[in-house]
Amino acid sequence: MPSEKAVALGLLVPGRIKNQILIEYTNDSSTATTIDYDRLNLICEDAMGAFRGFAKVEPDLDNAMHVICLVKGIMYLLAFYSGRDSSIVDKYNKDFFMSCSSIAKLLYPFAISNSPLVQSTQKQGTLPDMDRSRTIFANGRAHGKYPSETSNYS
Image 1 (cartoon, rainbow, N blue to C red):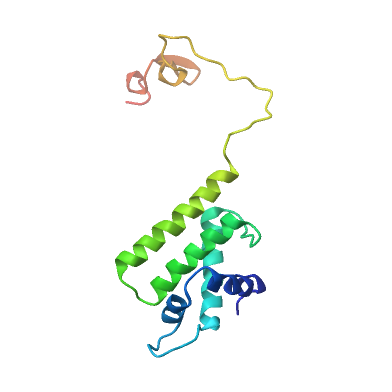
Image 2: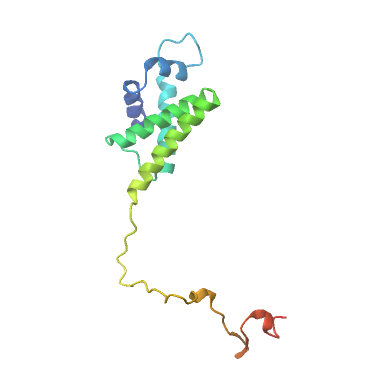
């Protein structure tokens, strides 16, 4: 059973997608003359679920960017579920997932920290700390720079 939000989205779709396309994609019969709103609403629910997963945010039907992305998702799922040509499905798929990723990128544009720590820079011409040789201690005694040079690890 589709949620109220999915039904509301289903009512927004016919104003954005041609009725003939919706009639063809929501019906199994080639003689259908009306949109199958039950199927459309279920697809709207699926599109909102995919949107949540890929855009990492709850869909907001008052946000124009979300609605545009959701309509692309609905077109993708309509084409996919109705068994359309794979090139059409791939095009809609790309459009939808690129839109979702654009929305996700808008949520976290910059890394911000409130940490009081300051990043230190290493001196030029020196090896990073992780690349410097280490003295290996076994049983409290220094045995060499590398594990292969120690008698305990041979």
